[in-house]
Amino acid sequence: MSMAERIRYLVKRHPKSRQEIAAELYISADCLGNYITGRRCPDAAMVRKLAIYFQVSADYILCVTPTLGDTFTLPTAEQEQSLLSLFRTMTPIQREYFLHSGYGITNYASIQQVLPVMGIPGSLG
Image (cartoon, rainbow, N blue to C red; front, side, top):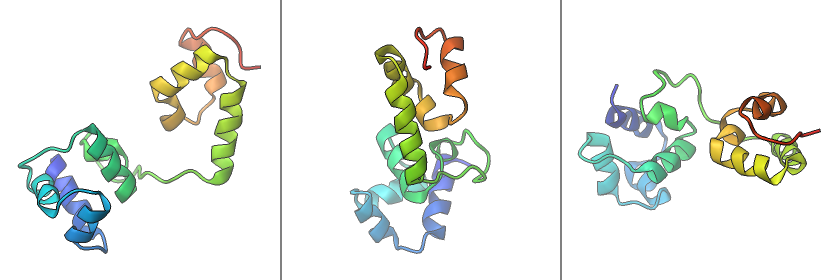
């Protein structure tokens, strides 16, 4: 399935009209139509907006993952607080790497184990 086909599928299964979806994404209905037909590809910022809007991963839209199985869901307040608490324990270098590597978004796993393996100095303890 191509990116256009995936966007078309997400729009089709959404309860709102194309015009409403486009308005909420701050694009024209024609622009959304171009994404759906494949005449135009969304840039990275628009892929992110589409992923958040339709609550799927950007990888799904970009055809990296084959199915919708791994859908995106917003974190709970408790998850956000836990992540913020962890972030506050990091050194400035660890924070910078954490933000730029994507681990803050894609990997709730033991960051205490990941950072040393990646060669990031300092300890979290």
